[in-house]
Length: 483
Ligand code: TNX
Image (cartoon, rainbow, N blue to C red; front, top):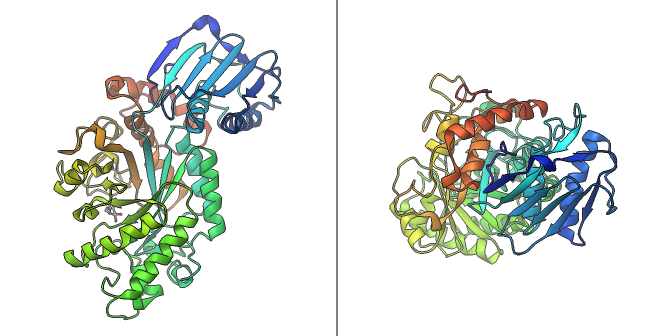
């Protein structure tokens, strides 16, 4: 109970009250779709590993799941006694968070779907828990290198274990367009056929993309789709040259420079295009957010950039979504729903601070703390280096509320760890860059600052080594952790 990551708000141990799980254990949800949903996920996981039936009959050793709307949003209470486990959740998210905690109280084999050695016992006591921030996310760049739907789903399983509840997918960049758009088919058939270093690239059909969205939803993870605009658009221009001002043919780019491409901000056709893309993407998105990029538009004149954003932001609102953008877009007056994602390493940004003052929420992704594409250490042979290195301790030891001048805790929506993939080519590379830093980011976003301590975290993280190993996660065995 004391090794849970992210660390819960409150843990009271009751060593006499350990609860055994065996072939006579039942999983009993209250009559509520949320409780039933969480119960299914728990039952599936336990069944796969133990082979126990775990029926929903309320007798004997019972794991009960129910909604308690007095609990804080996304929060849960897990009470373990000798004869009964009661998991109460504020809502569906709270119940799923409680399930993840319960799974962490079981041996590593369970989440790996393998038969556990010895008896299965849940430690007795009570955990009362809720997140510091509503948004705890990570981003995967499927544009620089493409990763297929199954790879993304496996990644979702691994991040959900640490109560990460948003996965932002960077779906288009100079090197590739990765989501099928019905009205503009060449985006993928022309714009999706390569990647960094000229590999074959790829893209998600609408059906594949929706299957990722549903898979994530079932595990409490909301997908945030991003189309980066007006820069980072070489792949779109290769597919439709009329979207550039000169109209000249281009090829999708296979290098790693940034800042050279832009949609033509003065053409009507550009806005027809953007409107279609936003409408179709919104249709595929049950979540509240749609990300429109807006970073590093070095080939767009500042006045034209502002014109572009002023036209595009309302399109997102009209499609029923809240816009998210990289913090450069805070140069325009944002609608109140718009979220600003801060990604630089400077401790002050006037436009972001002004947006926060105006009531906009800020998503914290400072590159020197949360960029998991960075090297872990100076001589690391893998990873980007412009903001790094980002060690496990660096990723852990900071406070999102104190980082940016003029952006206090009440303006912070949460934290997100982006994984850019210029140098990430395989699933193993994803795992190595993400783990264990994702666990650190998850705790930054979840646990009250007053309960966070690096020395305590590294001890707990060490206990997760066997857990990650059992699941086959190729994590980086960082030397600052006593594995
Ligand atoms: C900056 S962060 C970028 C990306 C790169 C990344 C590499 C941001 C909004 N833009 O285009 O992939 O650095 O770390």
